[in-house]
Image 1 (cartoon, rainbow, N blue to C red):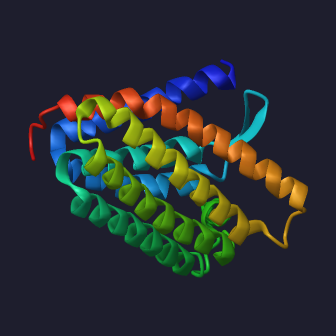
Image 2: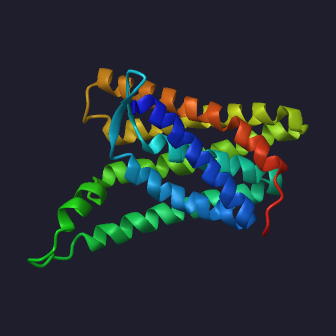
Image 3: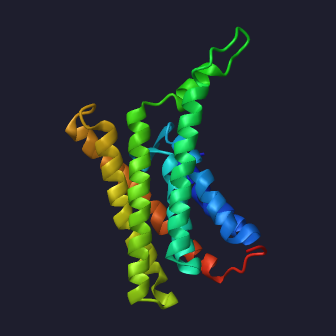
Length: 226
């Protein structure tokens, strides 16, 4: 199966599972999704693929659903709940980084086969981990702020697509710029940095456009537990 088709299926599956999580567990489910998504996105980002002629990472889809989740919280439960979820995601990611860095320091015994694989996934440089944390906190906080500012001016549901896409696009620009700058400046040539920035941002925008119908679906859903 071509990567492009698989990517679309993968993106839709992420969005559908998010909707199922919200339907079953309501606001609590969204909080859990954000905590889970921050970890999965940072694991998936280790894998690079070629999509539509662009070098990209898989983590962009799961990371995009976190913006969908915070926008959904802002829309249905208000700015306070959305910002709380941002802090929860930041704390979850920070804890996972700290815990796994300590776990990797244990000396494996002669029968262990997991250590090299865990090293490959979690043994990233602290600079990259720090870049991810800083970019996440700033971009997600900005997304919540912009979404709610637009909602204050255009509260009608028909403008939901505007506040969702404008907030996501602007915050994703900052997210990409902050992460690439902190993680790779001084490590890679400027032309390569620019290519990484453009390709990452293009993929994130595609995810943002795909998630728009699901924001409206969340608006209409009454959770079984809330």
